[in-house]
Length: 235
Image (tube, rainbow, N blue to C red; front, side, top):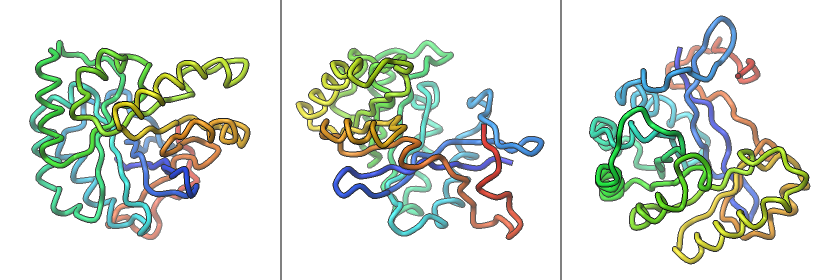
């Protein structure tokens, strides 16, 4: 069984949940597990699950993002599938997060720009996930700048460190670049109240992290009353 789990996104002022980042999970022998191969899921599978899940969201949780690896991002079938359900999600602000993971295909810059432009033209927000990690480095940010709406900076990618002060130069660089380019800026990986206290000074637009909310099971319209509980272990 395939379902979404959602980690709450929090606005900075006021500090309150406004939506979810969605993660695909598979149910296997009593546990929800991270799929070992995301490429096995078709665009239709993912968008069908999305249309069955979003009607169950609380009214205030309407800022939704879904992760696509680069191979999926440049695949025209994914854009077509998302565009086909856009009218059904009229009360949802749907963002596409381009992950930092290296793809299996040899994707050119021209292909990447074309895909970003098409998603942008179709009315989807584009987020660069985990900037300064993996393939989402400064070169890609500059390449896609005209089509991107948000940068996400993942503190968890730099742990362990002695203190948050160790990553302040990197964090400040991306915060300043977001402001310069007029992009939204999200800090993820907030794991304690102390983290939140320190990071609140960096003028992020949104926060994510275990200190604010862990990923939870998101039911679909057709889930029975006896559906597996939110407290079921998720790996």
